[in-house]
Amino acid sequence: MISAKNHLNLAQPKRPLQDLFIEHRCDLIRTAYSITGCHHWAEDVVHDAFVRLLEKPIGSEVEQPLSYLFRIVRNQAIDKFRRLSLEARHNNNTEAAEASVEQISPERIVNDQQTLGRVAKAMQELPERSRIVFEMHRIKGVTQKQIASKFKVSPTLVNFIVRDATAHCGHALK
Image (cartoon, rainbow, N blue to C red; front, top):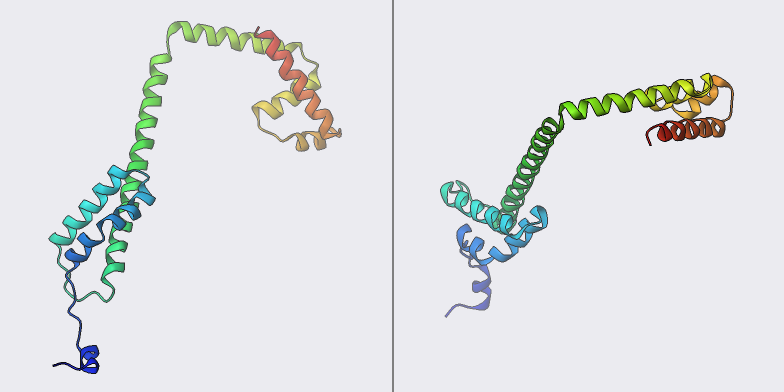
């Protein structure tokens, strides 16, 4: 008969990582889901992690096997999320480029040229200071504060000039 003292000193046999993985599969899926945001992708991640675990046996004993398994799944989920994000950005850029090519037609070019001509004519109708302020702010991207300093006027006046010039050009497009 083994005494309680001897029982505590006996080394507990280490459980294989595969057994721990299967036992905590649902928790591992939840971890992957918290990163990927999709239950199907989370299951894919956990499945891939398990296959990888079976293919590459660990050479040395893992001190904290459960933490190790969660780290594997977390890293795989992050990789999956990054890959999916990159693919989504690539697909959106490709679709946008294809859509922009399809939208360029001779009629569209003529229409855009006519619109630009009306805006240019409307800008010529503006007082010189208003036109310069409008061009500086809307075309060159100069801040209203910088324009106010250059013309020695208040930023509020610059704001009104830009607003009025924008409205004037907008009326030319109607």
